[in-house]
Structure formats: C-alpha cells, structure tokens
Image: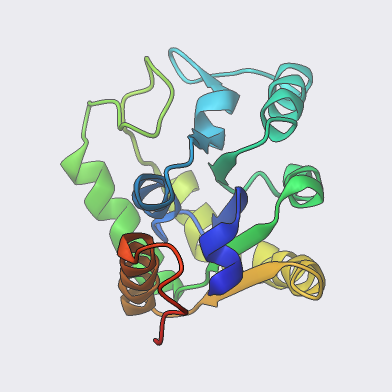
Length: 188
C-alpha cells in the first residue's frame, strides 16, 4: 500500500461497471492527482469515435505528463499506460456485479452525461454493451491480469476482487494523508 501512497501515475482497469471511474475520482481527491477518463479521450459529442490516431496522440500527451490517474480499459493501449505508470489497480469483480452496476448506472444517468463521459454523450445502454460486460472475463480478464502481474513485479499493483476492498484502500490512503510528516508508518 505504501507504493500506492506515493504513486504519481496510476492506471485503473477492470470490467465495465466495476467502478473504475468512481474509484479514479475518489483516489484523485485523496492523492491530489489529476484524473483522466479514457472514455473522454475516445468519444466526441453524439457518440462519435475520435479514431485511433487522435486517441493515441491524446493518450501519449497525457501519459507523458508527470502526474495522473487514468481509468478505462481500451486494452490495446494498456502497454502505453503501464510503460509510464508507477502503480496499477485492477477492479476484478464478478460479472454479475458489473452487469448490475452497468444497468443501475444507465438508469441513474438516463439521458444525462455522466461526469466521466465526454460532453454530448448522454448515458445509454444496449444489449451489445451488456454482452460486452458479460463477456469481459473470458475476452479480456486473463490477458489484462497477466500484464498487470508482470507490471507488479517491479511496480505497485493492487488487485481488488471484492467491492468492499475498495473502501478499505481509500480509507488507508486517506488516513495516511492525514498523518503529520515524520509520524511513522501507518499500521493497517
């Protein structure tokens, strides 16, 4: 956890609906780091895709900065993010939880642009997206986890497998920020 406390560039990944954007916003507030949502780089108003060239150029610009928390999948670009990150977090929750959260989010933000989404892209959900969420474990999970485990050999990697663990991580980080300099290590 100590490495996460001092990280300046954190990649957050996981299934759609796992809570990546919510965690990024909360973590950004606790660690006082800027948050970048990959969905905001990819989408243009009216759900128009930016295209790989524009997206890749913007992502390169972002990862070259000194501090960031980047949330999102876009697994094609995971290596780009990990090459500059000093920490990574994977929200690795059961597909039923992610599917439930995706539907709940769609109802809560129906017709409204979420804070983590690009302007002009009101919330929507369709069968194709729900299938994407359901298929994440067999389509992407193992490949992403393999890359993150390799990353974790030299950097901080936090693998959260229960939603309740997220609150614990945030609580430890928040309490460590409140400790005066030189007060000693946090016991968790």
